[in-house]
Length: 334
Image 1 (tube, one colour):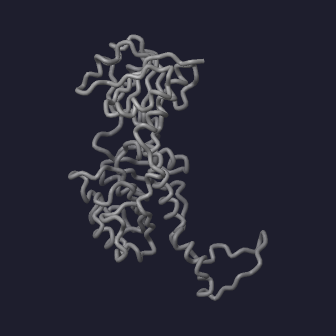
Image 2: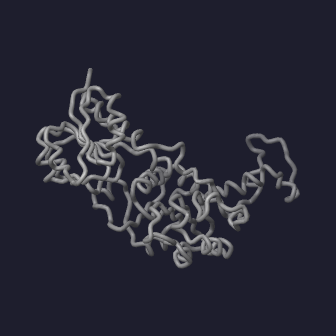
Image 3: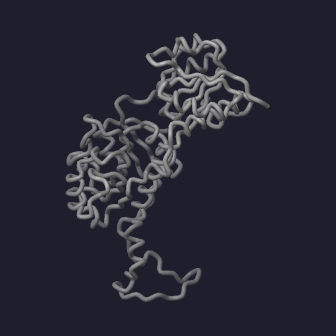
């Protein structure tokens, strides 16, 4: 059945993406909010509203008499008045964004790799390090194996460990979902705590920065690099993470004081680090990080295969088309 409905894209920054995508959704009349805060005047006569960052409150909804569906592009919806949405009886769903999901996957990859001392383990097998231990290969069976023959001292499980997310935007949220699925406890810090309902929804707890560093086994940095966040993680913060803790950086290199991190890794102030970003990229070949066995380095691949605003908006439009046609929301907010 052909979908019929008027859809407003609330974020004007998506105007070009909406124009490019519109030809593939002939059953939808796609509008974009004008620049300059004119969103309240644009909601009259729409059936569905897509928002990424634009706030949605009771006043806005009062002017949208025909509105049936609200779709949030991304998972963090602290800028939406959920009670006002519920009081109107609107369908409300989330469409996870590809970019943050890619970065969260990579952050989790680094966490798991650190927990298994993966690079050192690979090197031990590939280089035949058993010879240095006076061992020789033997035929294995169900009961005859060389269990943990390399004697990895940093090997551990992440279940029951605490992950601290510095920044809880879309990346932090996507990472917390994956970490909770593995049985990790998740703390977060950001400029403003989430509403209690959203904390319960994602089963996370707010901590001020110092407390988060003190309590976390893994600390993942996922904030933009600004004047405010430059060298947000320095010597004092690394000391708080402690000799059993790990730092993961999938944000930007300048958020971490790289010289301080090198000294902390050398001195055993922290157990290890997983780094996808650096002060200089590519990472200079003579960086001390390249020779450390408690560091896992990747060449800024956290963004995965890449994404665009248009690709993500298309996924939101597909969800709107399906829902207006009577289909169930894939990620409903109840």
